[in-house]
Length: 207
Image (cartoon, rainbow, N blue to C red):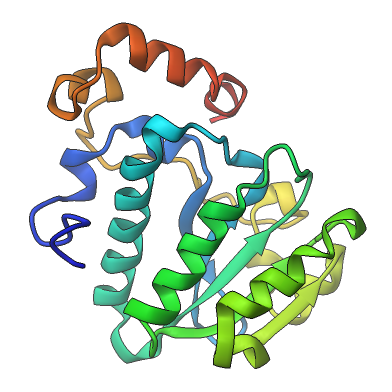
């Protein structure tokens, strides 16, 4: 599996465009109250772009691999941020991919899963998530609004969650190329890249 996702021959700062980071859909942030790193998946930032799915999955594995290598036995926490999410932008395939990857490829790393601000209309999703988690479902906690402060200090939360942390979660590594510069390598034309990036315009403008 490591070969199929390019774990050993791709790096985040050279093989993925800076736009992947600026979208802010999947990122490592601060730590919880016990000093365990937080790995965020933001539902509202997901877009169902089939042509980009493979690249997005490789990017996600790259983020997880880098974090796992850095923290070792300490592990990390997955925060499924459902704020402002709807059926239209919540990609179940992507959520399943992230959860399955963590439980299958990084089984000792996942300390717990924190599901934040899940709208009542999406509560039925919990049955699916529970199935994907299997034996890890007892590690799931729910938090709405400021309930998240039971797990993470307000100083460690991003401002969009009501926190006080100024750390950017959309910053790309130094000298990271753009998706346009990488287009040919991945078999896309400039026109195709422009069309796909248009789908993420609102998020890129916020970054």
